[in-house]
Length: 351
Image (cartoon, rainbow, N blue to C red; front, side):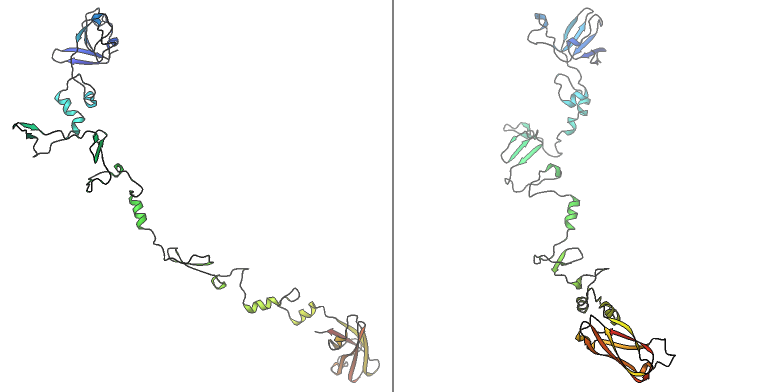
């Protein structure tokens, strides 16, 4: 397999490149051509001229029937070989050396500083290399090919570090980096209020920042009422206490009497042809001796016997005079003038 091609500019000779001897094409196919192998093949301790199978790296020439080993000659290294620094058998031109990536990272001696010193015999000598090799130098430990320098804790009092990225520094529990956003958040934090007594309260007071400043017991004066959730005054409470299923708190005399189921009724009375006195007995199982003064009586015209103006109701009066408990009560009707005909006697139990 053909690995590459190089040209001998001095002699105008083209040399093809393969990895090892077994990659060479058949010598009969490329007569008079040169090939270069980049690495040896098989055991080196027994070369081919001693019957071995070792084929060293180098130049091979096809005589048309077999390959002849010419020798190992250095050639111009490629730029990538120089940059990688792995090839130790080829030469480097000044141009390739100048373009090498490692050349751009070299340490330049500052201008104006001496580069040599005189030894004990007065002969100029170059200063020792400034490269720091890995190792433990007591207070300072160097590793990573001279790229990492560690200073032992508390051994050097004054250390000046210039232009070191924060991501190169290891944090610990008491030394942390913060971002600009975190710093701004910290500077904008609220300061706490003064301490207050710890307790459980229903009324709290807070400032414009929403921080609690005091606590207390809420009263009805602190809470607004709402629909169907109203407060009452002490006077309202008395009214409510006096309210029952019978008394709804908004009663009139007539509604109370009707709710108390007080007894009442109407009976017909008749003075006959003429008279000024009449006694009537009214049955009443509900009557008790206490009703002697709790039954109100009134005489009205029944509208059957008298023409308008003939009844003379203003001169008639009626009152309970006796009670037969659980049976009846007696009513006497008197008239200031003789009267006649029929009337209505109405009675009402009063409280």
